[in-house]
Image (cartoon, rainbow, N blue to C red; front, side, top):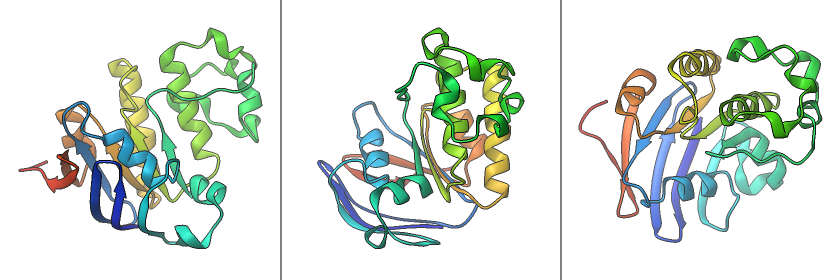
Length: 197
């Protein structure tokens, strides 16, 4: 569950939005409309105003790192701070690399050798280690081919079936139709229902 009331950040808002457990909302909109700004605000990565709540409590009632583990943001380009892949995971031996078509040797690889698609898939698995309640995904399959997009979407559906709520920013209307229960459009700072999913 995610409840957003009167969220404002820069030219975005006020945004009011509620997601049930296991609900997927796709967000589309023109380039520069603020889709990434919206996700970063929900994740509390940038200053913003508004009341946000998940099943385990309000944003104001928990420390920022705890909120960001529970409301997990996957940017279009993920950050890496150590040289070896395994150093970015708490329990690398437990990560299901095969579910996203990643080599079982990948934990020992240098980050510098990863393709953009491998980085994206590994960053997604890194988020899932913390068992988030909400996933904020910013063009998560943009660097992936059709086969790996299908694997990613299958893993995401598993999260949804487990009750995770998802906001999925995508430029792909077919992906929105496949994955989302609702389709919203961000334009002129406001979210509105699309004509149909």
